[in-house]
Length: 91
Image (cartoon, rainbow, N blue to C red; front, side):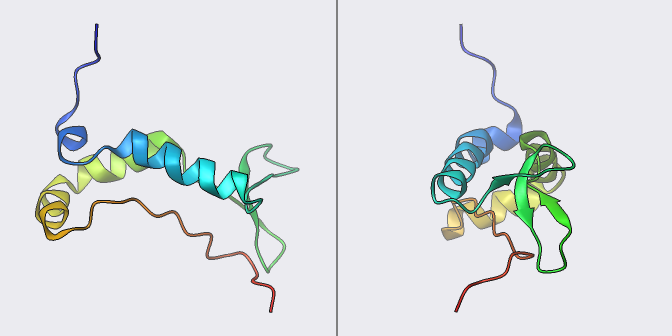
C-alpha cells in the first residue's frame, strides 16, 4: 500500500530530490561526518559545523511555501539543489 502524498509532494517530489542531492554531495566527498554533532555536513571556512538540513526541514519549507512552489514548478524550477555555501573552495 502506497503512502498518500501530501499536497507539496504532489507539486514537487521533495523526498526523492532530497535523497538525490544528499547522495550526490556524499558521493563526491563534499559531505563529511561532523565530529561534534555527528551529522552529515560541511566544516565552514570559519571552522564551524554546518549540518545538511534534514529531509523533514526541507519538506516543511516546501509545505510552508506551497503557493510559491505551485507557481515555480511549471516555470521549470523542478529540481532541488542543496549548496554548501559555508565550505571553502580550493583554487
